[in-house]
Amino acid sequence: MLFKQQALLRQKLFVLGSLAIGSVLYLVARVGTLDRLQPICPIESRLPPPEPEQIPLRTLQFKRGLLHELRKGNATKEQIRLHNLVQQLPRAIIIGVRKGGTRALLEMLNLHPAVVKASQEIHFFDNDQNYARGIDWYREKMPFSFPHQITIEKSPAYFITEEVPERIFKMNSSIKLLIIVREPTTRAVSDYTQVLEGKERKNKTYHKFEKLAVDSGTCEVNTKYKAVRTSIYTKHLERWLKYFPVEQFHIVDGDRLITDPLPELQLVERFLNLPSRISQYNLYFNATRGFYCLRFNIVFNKCLAGSKGRIHPEVDPLVATKLQKFFHPFNQKFYQITGRTFNWP
Ligand code: A3P
Image 1 (cartoon, protein in one colour):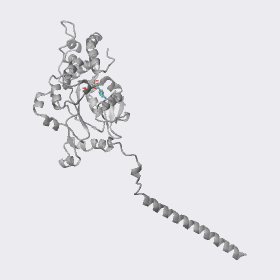
Image 2 (cartoon, helix red, strand yellow):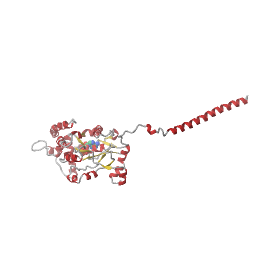
Image 3 (tube, helix red, strand yellow):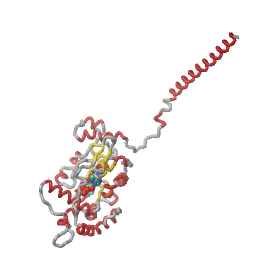
Image 4 (spheres, helix red, strand yellow):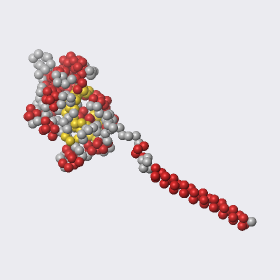
């Protein structure tokens, strides 16, 4: 009896052992098969192919890495060659308008991985001395970039300077031109405030805005005052239109760029034929500054300098209304030409 039970137990153990060994052998064989399958169907090939025009994130990191070194003049020629970096003439220029938000626009566009900004205002086309230095001088002022990136520069004086449209046309007749505008009276006051601050820094006195903007003899708007003339956008634009078709311009709403920048930037991305890459993540409102600031990544963010967003002096409401009435017909014409309408008074 005892012998029979022992034999049964041995039989059970044998069956269980065989099952266990069988399972182990199956698993080994399976893993072996999986291993062998690997080269036939690598993981990467199962992922969807990358979008052809997608700009690698590496490019953005690059912009914050080596390009910074390049700007400081620390990168070697070898590094430049290895990374296939080039100094390209701008394919788009922010031509104005002064105090429209040109710096904010440039900095915000630079958030796009395919855009590289020329940090300084180059003043190549509006300054005769610079212009005489030639196009190679201009190119050398440009930042290093990858060939697929586009360089953008901003010099707001271009918009109002007589010779500039023809000079830019001679460089590149198909260049894209960006104009950022604000409500003309506000822009004129902003322009005045910048000059006033400069005078105060030098301990100089300056006239009140009202005195400059209105001719005391005729009581009419003083069109000789530069801050007023600059705000007659249509007059300047008409000169540009002698060289470039209206489709080559994009008008940016500078007032909206202050309060809600993303939709304005998305319109520019479209105008420049760039994939939409700037997102709400890149822009955050800074209550202390009272403006949107820029977020490049977790570690790097920045606000514009304190000189952007000055407090304007109070302007006599009668003078403000006089100016608004003066600008009104010019604004209508500007809307008509550009196809972009604003709620300006
Ligand atoms: P104010 O100083 O009158 O407020 P520009 O760069 O062409 O000189 O324009 C300056 C204007 O940019 C400022 O005018 C400010 O209102 C505007 N601006 C737009 N977005 C800004 C931002 N994010 N930070 C600071 N200023 C901004």
